Image 1: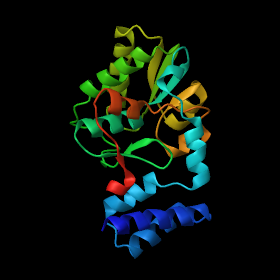
Image 2: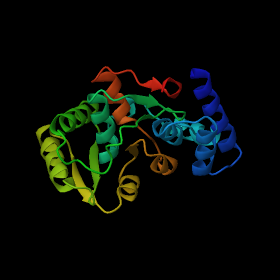
Image 3: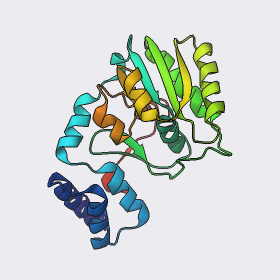
Length: 217
């Protein structure tokens, strides 16, 4: 079975490198290897054509580059990934070097314990000492205003310069507000000037969790 997964990943890379649309390529490979929904999601989120994977990797910066910079954080994207790792759900290192989760918790925070992950996220940002930090949350998601308010409180508590806001389009907001963008969203990563994998950094250094290679699904 492991060889089947490896073959599926290689086949998808082959198709993507030749310009096949992602959705149809994932469906074709998934059907061929009888992959389940979770395996298909990992293929969709984790496998990239070589040019895109290399482009994203070339934009990745280390934590030392955050010092003195203007950091813009894709709020829910980072929160979901950190929360997944804290819950014990697997997180994966993808072709482009970014850490992503497959937990399926996106879109709602009702009943979720988010105070601790928010504290970890903002305290980690504080330790990196950016010049300014801005968090943006999708206003269409429940409790987004409450979460932004909690992040503003934490920003003040840690004596950071910055803000947290709910916006109709977080992608646009993060891209126009920061010198370094904290996200694993591939659409945002395509357009970002520089990328810092804040969630991945927290997962490795604060949570001591080892992200899995995508072949280990």
